[in-house]
Image (cartoon, rainbow, N blue to C red; front, side, top):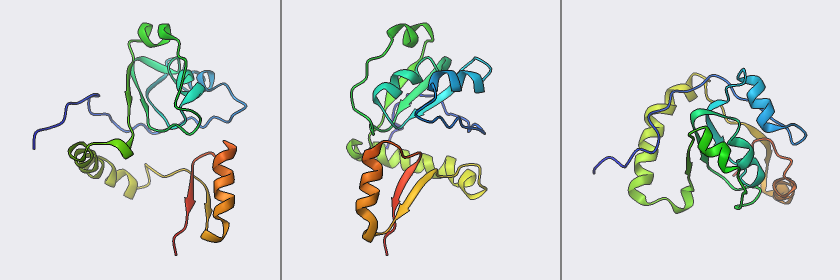
Length: 156
């Protein structure tokens, strides 16, 4: 199998994240945390207005990857923030990924992430865990847009 086209050069792991609540200005929080430069790579799991706020929070020549659309699939963006910063943008949806691409992603994740996960440099951000008995609470939490991290359903 040939290598799939590379959208982004191989990325190094960065030791840090900027948790932002709904009451904070995402762009300003990231710029403050990075000395005004912006993040080299932004992974957006929310979409909507949050995706738009990620653009000016990204370093010049940086990358924004939209992974999820927990808010909405539509976003109005400032094209100046995109072009003046020379940003690269990609969208990912594992539900629609072609099999050969998904195989390459899984192989790369194993190669690049197993070590950092094993030694604790990469950790999941879990908002809450629920059993099947409380699945309705999990669904309500997801719909509330108040979750900070993943909502996990424990399978017995």
